[in-house]
Length: 251
Image 1 (cartoon, rainbow, N blue to C red):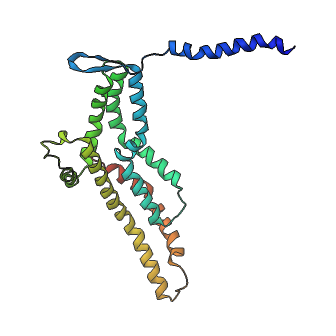
Image 2 (cartoon, one colour):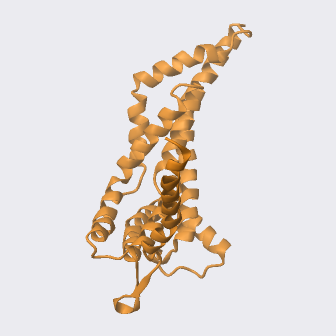
Image 3 (tube, helix red, strand yellow):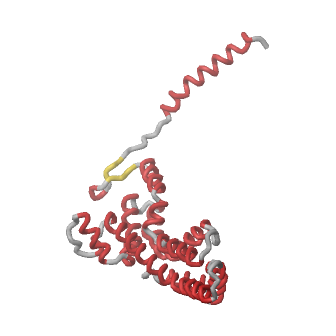
């Protein structure tokens, strides 16, 4: 087939490509629209709600780290790993994975409440997106408030220059979240200190025995490590640590 035979087809293809922007423009839907709602509120279009939902998804990792039990759990398990004297066992992926599933276990009552008061009504179109966010934040706020120390909360109220809080329910999230994280760090290090004590005693005893025997060239870690593993297994250490972690959260 000659080149002249292809020319009509090429012209038709070029015309179709030129017409695509016009067709796309004709099919564009209004993305950011809002209509007045009952009670003086504003009802946003579905496309804007989708945009807001996708924006919230970006902050989910930070919310998981800062607004749940994950911080305390992962710090305590990491300190336990250091107390045992292991560098690669269990791997970091196992520590993080176990922390995630323990977080889901601890936070399951809170997540169920959020699902009942916010997610289901939003899916049934009985609540707007703004109302669902406000309703869903209440169970999470209650959980964080129960774990937050009063002195930590008072510190951030003082630093922000906020007026004195009339009640815990009046605490804004901008003050509650950093106070909650600070309290979680304190609690995690306190639990980690208690976990460290028996292993530290074993290290001191082994080092004293080696020094009394004149075996200065032998590293105490070489002997203390299997002893710490044996002690941890005999006392069923994983159940003790995980059980104490879960029970440390105020319900």
